[in-house]
Length: 62
Image (cartoon, rainbow, N blue to C red):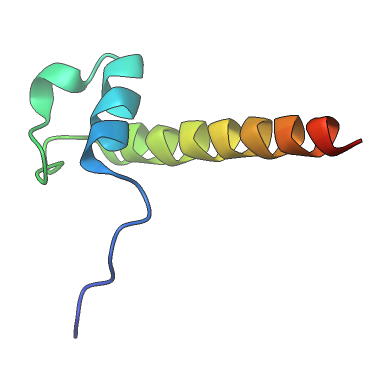
């Protein structure tokens, strides 16, 4: 099965890992040392950032 292309850049993923204090345990492309909770929190933070960006765009259009 082919792997899907990531929607987040490696830089963004590393930033999200650092936000929760796990930046010392990850390397670009290798997130195997993260717990499931940390990986889930990375997704949660990414969604929050995207929602804030979309909210900012919609406010600019009004």
